[in-house]
Length: 151
Image (cartoon, rainbow, N blue to C red; front, top):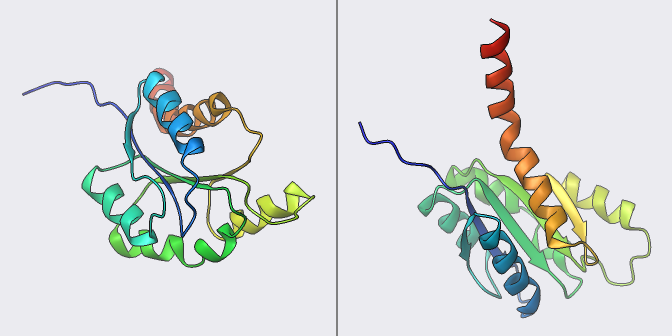
């Protein structure tokens, strides 16, 4: 039996017709430095491309970036596409998600209703997203360990 450490894979991209590359470049560097395998799909990524990459790389998380304010349209039906492809991954979205939106809590609620596990605004430090992902991915491990210890 071959034992190897599984590094966690994240698929990263800018959805829709958004061409802002700086944000995902920073995220790719930050997540790579944090020990994740990052599949960077680049800008103007379709929902289907996210789904295909998540399946191909057995991704633990799909990180969607959007900075041009049309994320809500771009993400309509996104989780259906992922589900149809058999993707079982945490989904995060971050950036400048709504044009002229002052109330981020409202924006967060909108994207949570669309199915995203976590929603970040454009001011979010990459470290915050990394910490959140570590927390989300370790939940099951911790529960398993707890069950083992208490039995």
